[in-house]
Image (cartoon, rainbow, N blue to C red; front, side, top):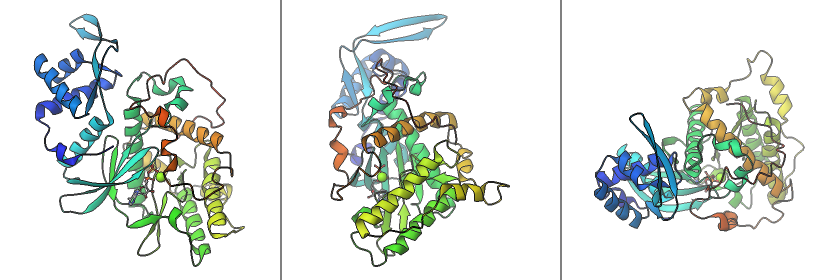
Length: 402
Ligand code: ADP
Ligand code: MG
C-alpha cells in the first residue's frame, strides 16, 4: 500500500476530527455506525456525512453497507439500542495516516520515501526528518495473515471483539519500541529508536544488508561466534530474541558488524517456553551457517548453563526483561500480544517442522507474503471470536511473564 505524505498536510481539522471519531468508535465496533461517528465527532450531521464521503474517496475509511451494525449508548439514565444498516471502518490507510500525522506533528517525520520491505507482518519505508536525515519507518500489520490462528483461542480479545488488527499492530509496535529502547540504552547492536505512534515505529536507518544476502565470508567462524555471543548476551540480560535468523540480522556495509532488528516476539528467559525459543534461535544460526557457508561447530550455547550462571544469588544477571516491563508499557495488554505470538509460533512450527522448512536457499526473501493472499482482505479479523474452535492442544504453555 502506498503511503502518501503529501496528503498529510491536506486534511482539514474537521476531517481529522471525523477520522479520529471513526478510530475511537472502532475500539468497540467492527463497523462504526454513522450516528456514532456523528456523536463522537461533535460535528453537525450533514457535515459529517460529507466528510465521511471525502475520507472514503481517499481510502482513509471505507463504507460498509447493509452491515446491520448494532450499538447502544447511554443518554441520561437510559440505555438506547440502535441498529443501523450503514457504517464505516478505518482502513490501514486511515490508521497509517493518524500515526504519521502524530509523528509529523512531533517533527520526527517530514517526508516519506521508498518502501524497502514488505514482510508478512510489516511494511518498511525510508522516511526523512526535517533535517533530511534518513530514518526507517516500520508499520506493523498484524492480522494480515492469521487471525485464523487466533480463532482457535476465543479468549484472546477479551471484551474487545473488533479492530483486532489495529489493536494487535499497536501492541506489536509498542513492544518492539520498548525493547529496542532498552536494548539500545544497554549498548546492544540494534538501531537507535526514534519515535513510536500507534502501530508505527521510527528508527535509525542502518546502511546494511541482511545476512541472508551474504553468500561468502572469509571467516564464517568469526561471525558465527559473534552471533552466538550475542544470543548469550541477550540471555544473560534476561532476554531471548525469538526470531534470530538471517533476515533479522543486518550486516553493516562499512564494518561488517551485525545489527539485530525485529523485536515484537522477544521473550523473557523466565518465559515458560524460554528454552525452546532459545534453542530455536541457536539452531537457526547453526543451520544457516551450515547450509550457506558449510560451517559447522560443536560449540554453541546451552540455555541451562546460562540460566544457572545467572540464577543463584542473581548477581550475574541483569534483567532487561524487568526493565522493559517497568518502562511503562502495558503488561496486561501485552499478554494479549504474547498469546497471539505464541499461537503464530505454534502455527509456524506446525507448518515447518524443524529442519524441513528451507531446504532450498533461493526462496525469495519476502516470497511468501502472498501465500495467504486469500485471507488478505483488508481486514480479516471478523470472527476471531467465531464458533469454530479446533483447540488443537497448544504445546506452548500460556505466557505469563514480562
Ligand atoms: P518484519 O517484522 O516484517 O520481518 P523487520 O523489522 O525484520 O520486519 O524488517 C524487514 C526488513 O526491512 C529487514 O530485513 C531489513 O531489510 C529492512 N529493515 C528493517 N529495519 C531496518 C533498519 N533500521 N535499517 C535498514 N533496514 C531495515
Ligand atoms: Mg524480520
